[in-house]
Length: 480
Image 1 (cartoon, rainbow, N blue to C red):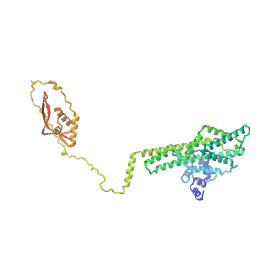
Image 2 (cartoon, one colour):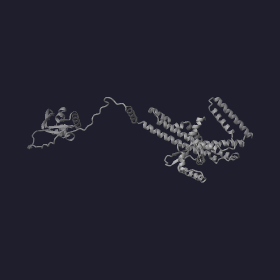
Image 3 (cartoon, rainbow, N blue to C red):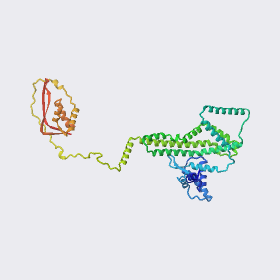
Image 4 (cartoon, rainbow, N blue to C red):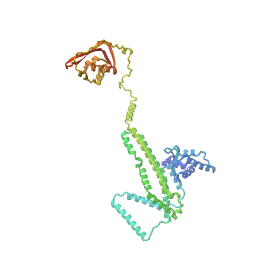
């Protein structure tokens, strides 16, 4: 609390700026009545503007000068240089929402405390402080013997208290002690209710820091993934998250809610407390805590869901090997951008179209007419075995096709005679006819009528003896 710190707070802290504003009475009274008193967390811009317009109209009727309309004032209060309101959009809602900032909540709480109190109780706060110290001292004790001694002291005190009650001696708080404790309870209840906005603000700041850390990460991919996995539960595992979860678990207990409701009902009907004219909201303050806690819980759940979705997207992108390769290529390209490489870096075959001149194409050839010999058919006199007609040979066309393709891989064209010389016929005339059929159906073939080639193969007589057979035909050329 030195001069420099206070000067910085006066210049930068929204709560201090609010108190210094010439419109502070309007801002504080309006925001207190709209958000704090009814315990509203988030209101549509149109509703807030309508309520403010009514207030401005009443003040203008009294002679006060407020030249701007309500929505202009609200946007001004939510601007970054003011930060008295938080303007945001709900998921799936187009209309803007307004809510108090924690700084504004602090300023309003401080203004409320400026009102004079009937008396300032000190006993209850001293007892509260003493109980807190006692809880910390006993809760941190690790020696079992000392813990047992403390428990025995408590049991002895309880036994003594039970004996006194059984004997009719009851220690009852007087009215002053009741009022002291109720004032402290009332102040604590309001502070707890107002602290929920700061809890939400802390969660948002924590979420923002986690996102910034991920976005600005410059380490390795593996370290980033490890860091991301460690930050997935950063919100729930923080001190703020653990403390809020413990409070939420305590408040969600139906038994404790019922017990708290019964105690509030009993305390608020005590004459000493009724003399203080307690706020009617104290009757249901535990429901206000529950409502504010639910709002904070929804905010935390939304932030965690958004953070997980953000992390999942990053992990999905970073796991893509192609992204890693592209990043490496970009990095190397940027590093070599100013360095001119020397020598031959790489060679690329010059692309070009294959040109085939018209004169290189074979000319059209007239198919020779088949001349049938006019032979006289005469009945044969030789005694032949008819079983030879049923002897069938199977020709493997695939085998012949592969033979032609292999030959054309080494040269652009090859004649039928050359094919058979490199691989003699095994099935005689039938295999030769199969070559001619393949040439006609699957390959580009040309026939040179000017040249006659002789195809020879080894055959057999009817008695099984070997013989040489020949066939003469125009030169047949297979083209690739």
